[in-house]
Length: 156
Image 1 (cartoon, rainbow, N blue to C red):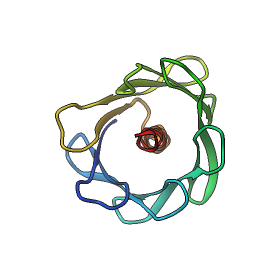
Image 2: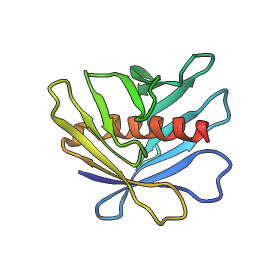
Image 3: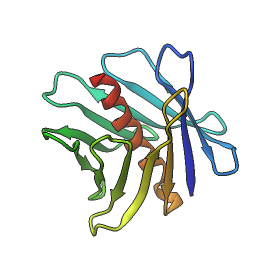
Image 4: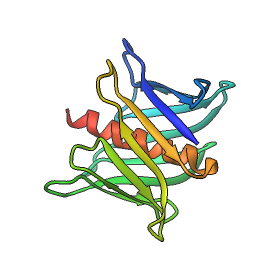
């Protein structure tokens, strides 16, 4: 399953549209006013399916993931010099990427690829392509990409 993750232009808060390979809207992400990032994910019918909440007052950025209001896991930025490093508390997943943070792979506990993420250059807004190998993992992969993008925005 291929997802195209596009940030909306001219938005006060983080907001994104996520399309499938046929151009259909699969998810909409809306940021809300809060301490730290708060991103709510809605399906094509407008029903909330997930949420990303940034924990404040931590040494390194930490984001909690919720599916239908239930805690699903977290992603923490870890100290590193060159390549960004993240600790993921979900299903044994990990992230391996380049030092630009434009391209990375989400791996499961046995080092098999769950999803690959690549940033498309030459767009007006942040645009990523997410190739998810199991459609059941799509919402979780999307939440990790949102958390990593939010962490990068906080740094800039």
